[in-house]
Image (cartoon, rainbow, N blue to C red; front, side):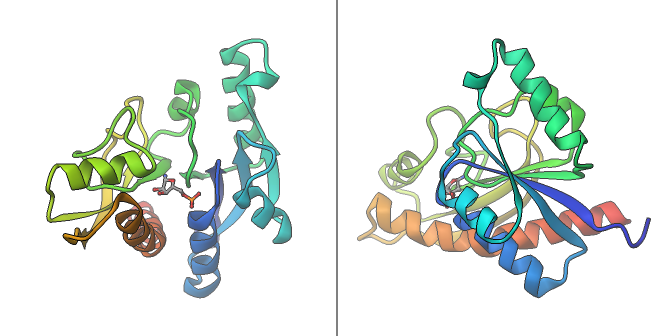
Amino acid sequence: MANHKTRLALFCSGTGSNFRAIFHALEKKRLNAEIVLCLSNRSQCGAMEFARENNIETVHLSEKQFDSFEEFAGAMVESLRERQIDVVLLAGYMRKVPLAVVAAFPERILNIHPALLPKFGGAGMYGTHVHAAVIAAGEAESGATVHFVNEEYDKGRILLQRKVPVLHADTPESLAARVLDCEHALYPDALEKMLEEQSR
Ligand code: GRF
């Protein structure tokens, strides 16, 4: 339906700077999408606080609340289905998305990774570890990647990437800051590209 606003769920665990970037971009870009849900494995985090301040529904969902992983996964799928979620954006979400959720939303889950995948991805490549590895490898550039989430960590189809320089004086922290700025511009552009792809 042409006038259907794409209903977004954002999964977060931390500061929520990517959440904020997408929220503000939706306000400005007038993308035909709206953030309906903020889901987190943590009851208190920057993203959940920002969502509450902006009257966006929040759901705290963690494995610890369930007797089995399968029940947790089922509850996550149900949380999305009962809100008619169309697209899930992982924005600083520090848990693996259960296979049942990936299967229920094929080519409908995006993640942002703070490096130029397929390099510097996979297990252990998160936070400043990624940037330390890029510096240690002597890379001249790094950047951010938005990719579709499939059953393998950081391996789904790449939707959009953007590069930043690595400077000689860079520390993992200074590179992380430059990459994070890049992410905040990249994620909304990637979402726009995905919505365009879908509308064709
Ligand atoms: C970002 O570096 C992002 O690439 C990674 O999580 C980090 C924190 O994101 N996925 P945020 O500030 O919580 O949005």
